[in-house]
Length: 81
Image (cartoon, rainbow, N blue to C red):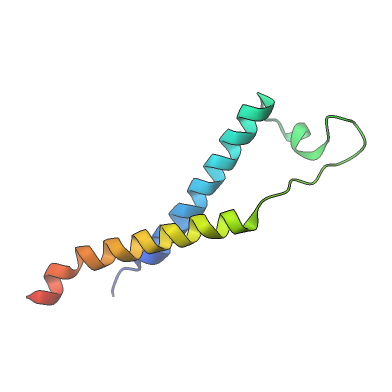
């Protein structure tokens, strides 16, 4: 069975986006807690976290491309011989 490096790359891109998102929110607020995730600092009820889905798609797409490219380079010697 051939390894699906593009899929692994896409999942890695998604995990990388999640890490960047958490670190950027940590940088902006200075702390991460469950209560802060579900309430606004203004105290007017729950806040919705707006995630740029285009940016998520970009991370997954770049990760998939890099995984596909890695698979092509790694399997190059097996195809020639």
